[in-house]
Length: 219
Image (cartoon, rainbow, N blue to C red):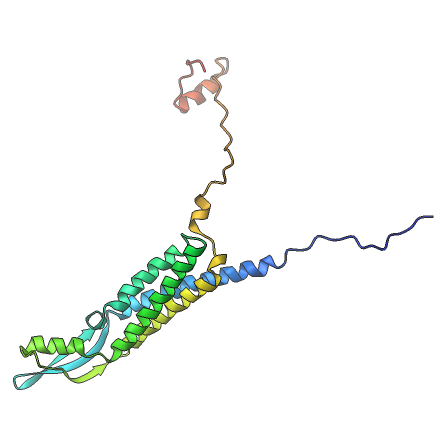
């Protein structure tokens, strides 16, 4: 009499968990690159726009003055360049080094946004222009007004900050550029030595001549 075993046969588990993790890594990687590049671009472009406007009294009239972001503060543009370098360096390092670079990326965005926000109400650049224009070191600018460009610059810094936070949270799952160039240590197969062409077969002689070989030389 035969007996049928009731013990279920274990089946190999499907590796379903790795697919969502891989998809999430790709999404965070794409978001980090997009946010970092877009934020740095916004900061660099907005820093060159007019941030403040005013008028200086000259003789019996007034002279309009303007100051762009670089006149007010050069910190946001400089930190945007640092952020771009850090964004690229994230993929060149691994482990603890990647965390350090990701933190630098986040701090660059934070510094760029904060300096742009504080520069939105700054009048020192226009006061300096007024003093140079009038020749009076005590002169100040009047009818001072500010544009929206400092706040746009601050928004760009916020995008860089978000890219840095994504790198801190998910950067350990992102690929590294140096990985594809590393050797795995396995010996490479050697190419088989070429044999001398058969003089009885003219097609082999012509092929050897096309390769730049001397068919008369013995192997």
